[in-house]
Length: 57
Length: 250
Image (cartoon, rainbow over all chains, first blue to last red):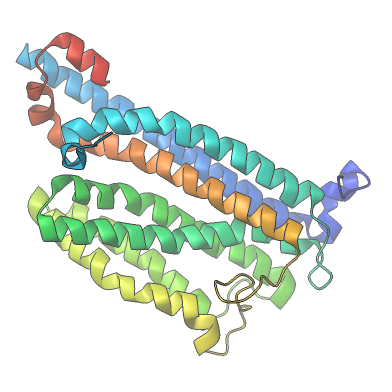
């Protein structure tokens, strides 16, 4: 049971669209950014440790 | 089945265990957040007082709850680290801080987005907002203290003490809406009274909170693995006897 009657009504959010969508988008972007930053950190840490492993072999 | 928990307090043993848990927490987080967004944005009816602006609640409250909850967990690990002098506990403190800071930032930003249309101001210096802003500075303090001290053990202890002392702010944030006359509204959900919101709205909010919690677990476990790699590299890899074992752990 979707509450909205049309897509434009959904996007307008009763005139509060700017505030509602900014909130949701900033939250989503922050979480995606955190995941990407962690992925890069992991790649860097693994590259570093690979050098160490090689030196031990 | 008897599990030897102390075995997993060693970073070397915890590393692969964390790696196995991450996809599960990540999947549960993605599914729960998807259903939470569906309910919050599409199914839940409008709020008769605040109109559609109230929908910010579906990210604001989960972010704010996580900001406080993660601080308590971070301080808990700091206490264990200080008490038992356990490396992995301090690593957990180190891994939790950035995610906690991010949720604090999000609680403040989404709060501003909610404040502007409902109060007419992005920011007011009321007790709830001010104490939450202080929480952001506390997370920053815990992180900066670590990076500013070169000696790893001293950095652990200093940031651990900082995290532990700062926990007094958590009840202040939580009860600020009762103790002071704040512009910020009181609690809609509490442990002692029936929720002051419609069941469908509450369901959406709790699903989003659970999703953010599972997301935090996945992200924090990923970060603690990075921390282990960065801090323990030499001891870590030299303990693994074969190349095959190294490949398996990764």
